[in-house]
Image (cartoon, rainbow, N blue to C red; front, side, top):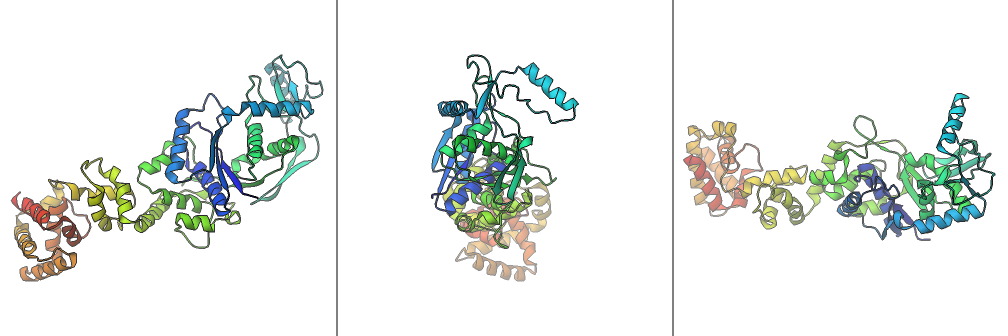
Length: 461
């Protein structure tokens, strides 16, 4: 049997980290098993669902590279199927029309609460027959009154619910809209979803859904309820917190493969391995390696993972990814020139934003000196070092960093100075600041003409 998993977000906001991890686990399991990954948009909440959210969710998944095999399917376009299934349950006596008014329901619940009982529907319409379909009503499922509803969770084993605690819950509202627990069962069954991997916040929905699977004559899928993701304060991440949306991390300069690596390590592991390529995740992922303990999102851990992924990304590809960030301040920058200095920056950059910021010096025409750096390293006492540096570079037959280092080492000995006493004025002259890649590597990339021009400009100031 072909494994079929699904990701079914509600388009009521941005795709957050918890949702992205759920999508990843489903995608990885399908890819690991040679199966299919289905995308379904659960947009039955007409008031809160928006096209903007749909676009953002699709863009987030595409950026992460979680391509889907079928879909996206929209629940709002499948109402005829849902109505057909509701009518089927009514005909078979497994569901019934409820005509109780809001006032009657409120009074009944209040009485139960006053008696210290769970405020459930009192099932007043359960045995009254189908009634008039033209009168305002909801449709409720006939839940069993006794016994146990159980299922086997991949992580938790057998989970049981007492049927006496289950309500005759609504599956279709008065306005004809169908409810979440009903449509998700119909869709999963009709789409052949045999593995449901989702957050443990859906655990309470599972017994209701199992009742519906049975009532509709569907087979029951294999459930895996994964722990929620906690923030550094040990509280659950908020779906509506903008800083926790996937696209926010894209804009902060993180790589999609690093995000997937981070998501996977939040609740899943493979020995002591921390860094995974996308292909390694696919090959090594399994449901039995998912942990039950809540995962904690740590931005410092993401920084570390992203830095490692930047190191293993080819220079040309890294330049292509960093170029949009660099062009915010250096609009004339090109990927080809950026690729030349990526090797100087990738070992020290945590994000594409940091890499782009570190590359600005290379594309500037007029170096802007940091006041403190200029006051300390470009004062009159630096003149001999700069003049000698210009002469040494002019005389250099090769602008290789090893050759330049040798020439400057000899120069420092000749002047009776430490190498750092020459290097820091040169660094500030070339970049404007005191923190940069190695000066000899920078001079090699800049070339003789540009290096001399910048040193001369610093000398003339």
